[in-house]
Image 1 (cartoon, rainbow, N blue to C red):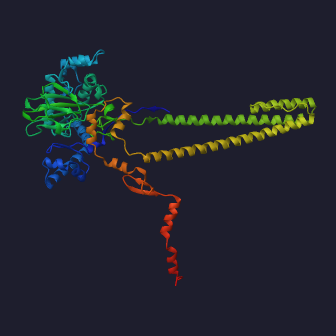
Image 2 (image 1 turned 135 degrees about the vertical axis):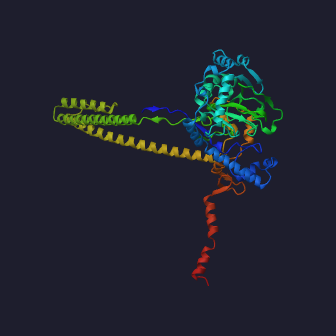
Image 3 (image 1 turned 180 degrees about the vertical axis):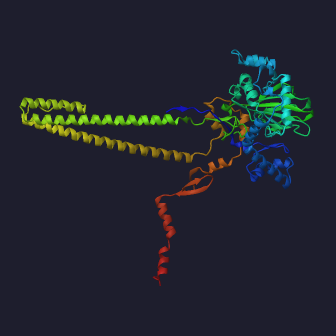
Length: 579
């Protein structure tokens, strides 16, 4: 059967519609599953941020529901916008849609990436060729684009902004900007930038973060201007690595600031500030806490590329800090992947099936011909034995010897021949009787063999059933749900990828409330519980629902006696048998 390996399917995590909902008024990322959960998880901190009255809370609730609905429709609406732009939009600078050329890249960037791809490249040699902003935080600066290319790209983006084409939000925090895959710049600009230039560079700088296994991205341009977005709160990127390139225009303020890796925003006291330089890019890890200071004057446009490695994020979603719950998505999705089942060539499979049927029929016909030959041969041997019984003693003994040899060959094991010193009549009769006894022995052996096979099959079924029951009992007695450490140990031994630090583990455990699916899974576990005071054994479902009480036969009789005590007296009274 011919099979063809289908390409990987890119997906997103289901947490996208419920986790990390950003509320700019309160500067919070919230997890939202309903009003009761919101009050329980975030009530105190919301009140401390100004959400005090019932009106404030209802306004927040409506805002969260609207954002959840927007995220659910995001894929469908983005595809519709991309199709409309491709058919109706007329660019002002068509040259930026051509495949990325070396002339658009800074000479320093070409030199750095060429060294990174060379056989003898190492980290120390690379660090001598670029600017290290923070060795501790592993933040670097590198020239990326030339000034003419930044100007051309900026003119095209402003032309698109002034057009009447539909525009989507670049991410869940920024309101103004452009998604490059909707504009048609993903394939000619960002994909070759990632595959040809950023891949070898990131492999040396961030090998522990999937830098050498980048297989997808999400690229967008953000705009900061008076009357629009002016600043950006603390956040993490939904990426393993990030490239942030300043395109222009003239502006003051708006510097980037950085905290620690997966640091809580409330613990940020002395952030590291990094100023923007047009044409230059800042490289950092996606989990590095960062934000943008308020814009002073002018307009600031930045190209942001989220670089993703499915080998890393398939193990742990960076947004919900759990094993991802994959949902199919368009394009690169959110960088998660899963293998689709292989496709089958139906026509070849049908031909193979027909061929196998023909071979089976030919094998059955050949078996029939062989059995017919054996039957004819046995009938000839029987007729020879009958004719030999009326001949001389010498011929009878010879015939008996021949028959004995044929029996030995047919039964494939040695048997002792009968005594040849008997008379002619006795030897012929012994020959015919041995022929009949051999056929009856064959039937008995076949019957015994079938009985053995049936018994063996029954034993296998019983053992399999006992094994399943034993596994069920062990699962019922086990505690529900593996811990994060158990999961990480079981997966980290075989797969390549970053090892979680103690700081990351504590952050994950702290921000991991139990979901509805986890609660349902916990409540579906059935355990045996023994009451130490009464000695009773009960089957408990979840946290306390009693399914069944297991008692002995004697205790069962006692319970029945207590339950039916007095029934005979009541019957006699109803029947009028008592005075």
